[in-house]
Picture 1 (tube, rainbow, N blue to C red):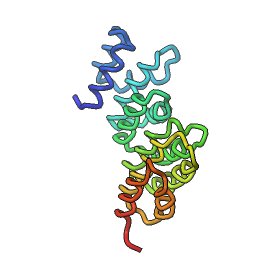
Picture 2: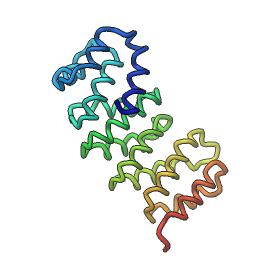
Picture 3: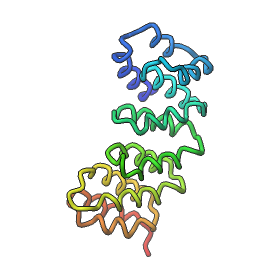
Length: 190
């Protein structure tokens, strides 16, 4: 059992109250049974999450919509599990969806995991989305500095010279300065 799956099941076990339905979803190898859970109305969130995670990790694209919704959830643990499954899913829609979530200024508080997913995906959408998100977070007194820091670190990891101006703009920010300097050092020399 992989560490992400173990963490997910430990967390959901409490929500599911060790129900028979939980153990059935945990044990089944039937992808059709898992996919049905995603469309059944009266299922609790934990059941949707478990089914989507298991399908996503198997590369079953029926999990895509559920995983994207969970990537933008207010509970960071759900976001982590969703990002892991989306990365393994390999759906070509994932970078565009993650970029839309990362750049949505109304949901900036929940953008940390979409930003990290964009970095891991290394897709064409990654750098433009991280630059756009970071640019919006450089205002004085910006409360979402952790998202800004993830953008800076992601841009350093991606090493695209297009990020230079926004990384230079991040240098004066005390919480971002060290990471911005490190990121700039990883960019190609002009």
